[in-house]
Length: 170
Length: 105
Image (cartoon, rainbow over all chains, first blue to last red; front, top):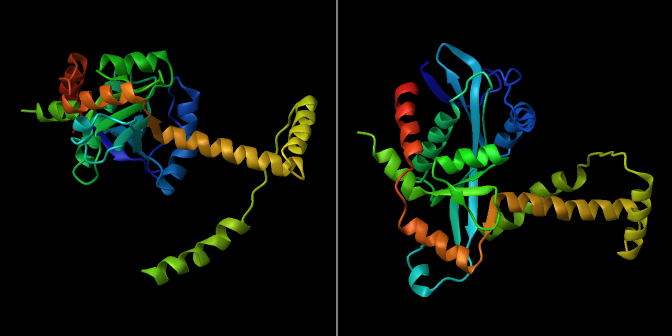
């Protein structure tokens, strides 16, 4: 402590040492994250401890997402500049190392704050998250996310809610 | 502008078209028989071309679905209402934000 967040950098961050409970997420960080960044598909942010900046405490990925709407009543549609395809931000993956319990919420807050900051240069009306299992689903639900459409593992939080959160900082 | 648009394919196309990679997978013998039959039924000259086409369609669909959600009319209306009148941050999220401000610089 204190922690800080950085873009994943294979030269400085020890990806091989990262151990979360989910093997697929470890494998993503170790084998896929850098390729996705190179191809501009998703950006990976890692949380490190100032005292040991090579150790990845946790990570998350952000990418662009689209929510496609069905036909809406005209009065509602008029209020949406980008109707019917609304831009959103996707937290595709989020995981902490098993040795750092309690840090998942810090990862989530950073992802939300970053998604909100990004709206100044690129529109985004909601933060969508992909929950890999029931534990992840409960984690997002506890923090106010609700189901998006018919997919039970896809949840979202309105950007207006994130804005209230970020602006509550006195 | 038009000249630029015309030039682009000439620059990028050869790279994507000529490069190939090899993929091998061990499959049950009876699956191979089914694949051969399906390839014939769909007018493919080889099992290979059938597999490539089918995999490409399926993979593109998977990738597309990971980047977007299609809502029906009721879901759309509920979603838009929630954006126009966003709820207050949940207590757990507010607590997490307080921790964040203490522990992250």
